[in-house]
Amino acid sequence: MSNPTLSEKSFAEWSAGYSGESMTLKGAVNKCILLFITMLIPAAWIWWKMGEINEYSLSGMKAYLIGSAIIGFILALVITFKKNLAPYLAPVYAAVEGVFLGIVSKVFDAMYDGIVFQAVSITLLIFAAMLLAYRTGLLRATPRFTKILMFATLGVGVFYLVNWIMAMFGVQSFYFGNGWLSIAVSAIVAGIAAFNLIIDFTMIEEQSKIGAPKYMEWYSAFGLLVTLIWLYLEILRLLSKLSSRD
Image 1 (cartoon, rainbow, N blue to C red):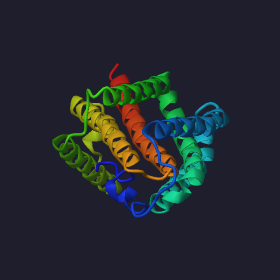
Image 2 (cartoon, helix red, strand yellow):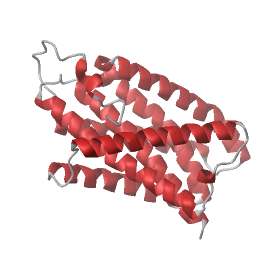
Image 3 (cartoon, rainbow, N blue to C red):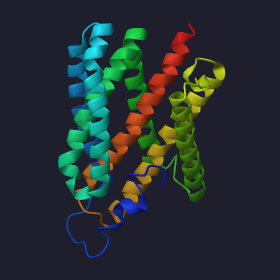
């Protein structure tokens, strides 16, 4: 599947002999909302703590930014490999990501006033629209849809890696500019991230039907949050490119 945290392998370990309470798509979505709220609290705190953006405030936040990025990555790995710990670690992961996103969002908002509110609103609207489209059957993860999206997501991952390597050698990629090609690529990547939600919903519902354990709701909510964070960052990047052309 496209989201590595929500794949058939992610659910394989419990499949033999489990007979307890099963997870549901509704439960996973509700827990994702709880994780999102948990993420907003430290994001708001770090936003307030940074105050007015200047060289001093950015320097003081560097440790928070790097620390939250590293801790978030480690927590994501632990949750991925120890899924039974998701009920305890997923909220911690959400809080840590809140610190990271709070700093990033504050910097973007200082450059383009109001952009963060727009990005958050669009992200939530897309999540709601994708959930509605899935529940009504308007969008379904057919084998062809899944295969195309899987390769598209893999392509995005390779594209990120190439840009990262170029940056290490001091080469500036067009992707970080505000040209129309850069904007088009950002829009495509955001679209790929959005459609990944359909894959996520499908995997969660399929596993709930065959009796995945209740704690997997927290793991599934964590997986959904990973996709939402990716979507939000891409929308934020896209809006910033459009705003810089004004």
